Length: 234
Figure 1 (cartoon, rainbow, N blue to C red):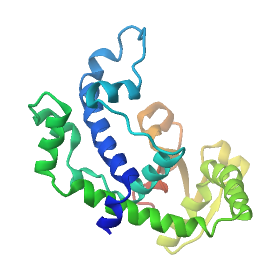
Figure 2: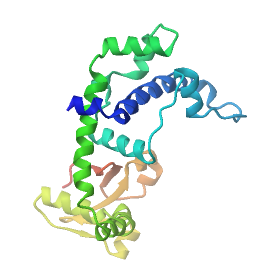
Figure 3: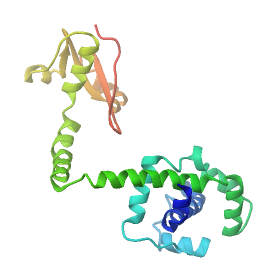
Figure 4: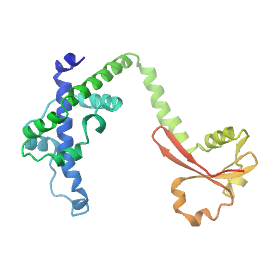
């Protein structure tokens, strides 16, 4: 696999550029809190300019190539700190003055990191290519429809799922509240217990909590779904 990767300069160039950019921006990130709230910047230094000034070169890629490689890299988790090092810490330990010195310093400490990360990303790209061949226009329409309609709806209307899940865990029934119950701050019932369902941010509003005379179930939207928190329910 590595022989294939070394024959693909786009992949290798991408990872060298990624590590270089990470090293450059870690320096700016460290001092951001000191300048972030000052006057509005009067000029902008582009990433391209930073790359030229610090490394002396800018790699070029076909249109969309870096976006696709970056997606594969994220899916493969190929450049996580556990695999390539914590760049923000490494750049602080580096005591050299030039990009070439940095390149040598890094590769001496992580001699196989770029090849290994490239290999994992390339393997993910191969999987993605196979999937691309199975994607057609009707599938794209289904995805767009689900994004616009279903996921928007469940993002606001998931009380039923929370009630159903907890009721199942307690081997009992559940139902949503009727308009009269809802007016009293009740979102539904788990068995015979009336409950209210609120986002976790509601915990920071104690005065609002005092107006609800029912156990509160809290939820937090996270990537891939929601986390649900609640105390024991009778």
